[in-house]
Length: 103
Image (cartoon, rainbow, N blue to C red):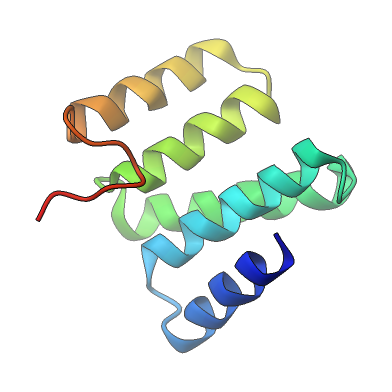
C-alpha cells in the first residue's frame, strides 16, 4: 500500500493534472483508512481531496467514478451518492471495470 501511494504521488508530482493519479491517491487513502493503516482523521480528507480534484480534471473516467463510489460507501456511508457514482461508472463503461480499460 505504501508503494502504491508513493507511485501515485510521483505521478501527480510529474503531472498535477493527471486525473488517474488523483483517483489512485483517493483510492489508496481510502484503502489505508479501511485497513486501519491510517486514522480516518488523516485518510478521509486526503481521499476526498484527491477524488475531488480527479473529478475536476476528468469526471468521465471510470476509475474516478469508482473511487468516488468507494469513498462515498466506506468513508461517508452515503449510500445514495455511492450508488449514483457506481451507476455512473457502469454507464461510462458497462463492459469493463476500473482494472481493465477499453483499447
